[in-house]
Length: 94
Ligand SMILES: [Zn+2]
Image (cartoon, rainbow, N blue to C red; front, side, top):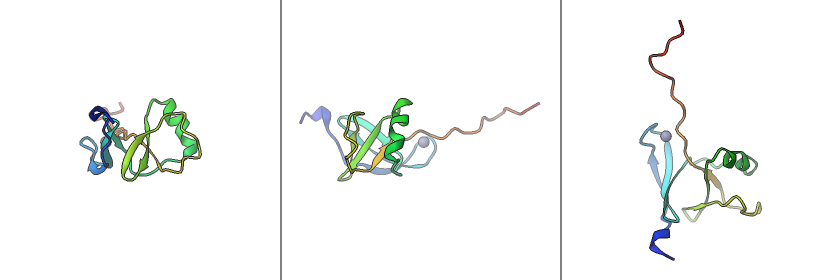
């Protein structure tokens, strides 16, 4: 394996923006930050349709999920963390 495609163990880390708990690691050389709660397999196509990458959690590592991964893959599926929308400040209804 090339050093450019390393995958590290994911670590628990608070999101630097919203402070929610995430899992953070390197997957095939790219940074991955995911929500720790697995998603339902049936929800994955809609998440991909929104351009949000998903990962399989295997032995503590985040493996990038190609959309063609067989549905029989038993590993938990984790979606890339997206910060929740915060209320807009300074906008008041008139
Ligand atoms: Zn966040």
